[in-house]
Image 1 (cartoon, one colour):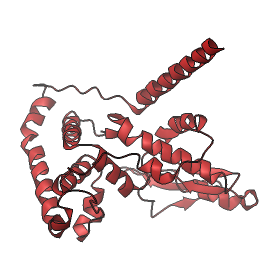
Image 2 (cartoon, helix red, strand yellow; image 1 turned 90 degrees about the horizontal axis):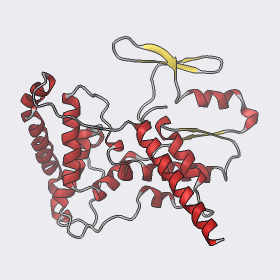
Image 3 (cartoon, one colour; image 1 turned 90 degrees about the vertical axis):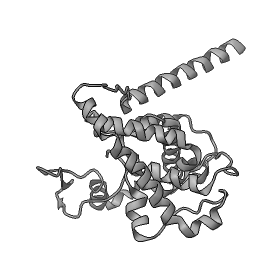
Length: 277
């Protein structure tokens, strides 16, 4: 399936081999539900003892990792590119392909390791993943070492020190992530007067936590205002004036580049081995 696993359809129809649900807002059409259909296959074949893995990275864990490894300059740059992308009518902005080292590779490592460890539980597995990651998962699978990795290590690789990171800056990073991605934190936590991150190790966390929602709203309004103030320039971009070109590679281009890089790396390794022989 495409994209992260967020919600399932509340209405669907069960066929003999597939489950169907409707997609689209204006003219919804009935299509095969890629999320629910694997469960039907297992239901129809109980003798095969197949485990279904809904394989995705926990959103909150990934957000915490991104807020720790990406500084405000990088996040503001992504926000600006998001704004420009909207101005050019590109509604499929994806920050992952702009910084795969932070957004994609740790996620792929987690998905691959989850599959490996699941093989110790069941010999037959159906894994539901974002299809954009399939090639990367296969490549990571081929390069797995003999020892299993900790899932926590895959999700949260070595993080930079936060001894000098102010708690307010930490909150601002989460705000920026919420603005150019889905507003997951705002909709599911802040609007309900809850905040899911502790900010451990940041400067001033103990005192600032008492004003967490004031801090969040300050930065959210600040960056939302900066977006609204740029709307006149959006009109210029749309009508051809001062056009800003953003060369954002597609997911397929990014994956091809990584595959070619891996081939070159393996070729160098073979050459070195032959030289040693």
